[in-house]
Image (spheres, rainbow, N blue to C red):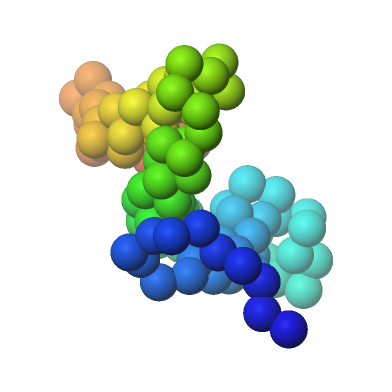
Length: 109
């Protein structure tokens, strides 16, 4: 049985893979068979999550645009889409006198 999809021009997103990557990055305890990610793995996983978001944002936007014009839900979702795109365009800022910070990782002192 195939699930109905909204009319979009993209290929279906792989939610299973996306969940696995997010769990590995944000909740290593959710993947007990894998050791916690190292610095390089954190960077790779962060890049993957950003890529997943870049795929999801147009899907969410297309679904929101099908909602009734003037709808609170439509404008709320479109505001979230704008926020997501804005955050995806930002880059990590370099720490004072050091290498760029890894998003979501506190510097070790």
